[in-house]
Image (cartoon, rainbow, N blue to C red; front, side, top):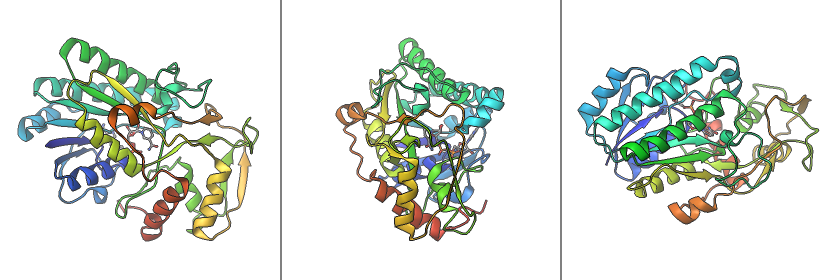
Length: 326
Ligand SMILES: NC(=O)c1ccc[n+]([C@@H]2O[C@H](COP(=O)([O-])OP(=O)(O)OC[C@H]3O[C@@H](n4cnc5c(N)ncnc54)[C@H](O)[C@@H]3O)[C@@H](O)[C@H]2O)c1
């Protein structure tokens, strides 16, 4: 199939692109390179540098490439930035996303797979978090994901748009070629690596007085390759999918301290920790129930154990200590 991947030069998009190509699909890779990296894009993908907010550019892509389905990953996703500057977030994540949906409607596309997030659940009262947990986002980034999922629901009802939203918990890990390189980097594992790489003397952990076993936040890490596999499964199930939504997580939570310990084991380095006060908006525990994705999409996470995740991420990071250069 001809698949348009938006955000293809980003972390998850580069791995989704790699997996689609390996399954014989043709990938049209869209990115404005605002956050992404040209080198993260497989050479076999057809790269178009364009912005989601440029409706004419999007329309051109659909007119030229006979797109069968869309994987929509492009977004701004740095939570504290979304709090400081919601306007930019709504512009890209909602207005840009609507441009994409409106192009899809005029060009007879089978459907869309959307990168949603555990951020839609805010501070959930019960874990593991199921898909019917109330959606109470606590930052504009999470709000954008809720809004876009709702737009997909109404577009499904009114125009018959097929869509599947995949609500990732914490994406982590790497393939041989593609790994995590955000600027700024807010995710724990690449930040912990800065110590063994000689780029930092300690790692900062925000909060050690949460009501968890060791006092630090607990998160559900899901390997980026398992996330990419879920996109392939979503594609198989896209016909007739009216705004379906699935959690993607391993179902097991690890505390920040457990993650640091695993990095120590994998790298052989000891990692000094400095504790700072809690960050606004961090829920103590976020762990997914991904039962629905397993049952309905036939998704089986194969690599989402913490050790596999950290090992694969460290292999990539030690091969590319500065990440992508551009
Ligand atoms: N990484 C995670 O843990 C995680 C968790 C939950 C959800 N998500 C979602 O998954 C998706 C991918 O996340 P990621 O970590 O790979 O992010 P990323 O920042 O690495 O990739 C996003 C890509 O989108 C591109 N982009 C942004 N705005 C654009 C625009 N206006 N036009 C064209 N391209 C644009 C960026 O240049 C970047 O390459 C995002 O939608 C994110 O919200 C990620």
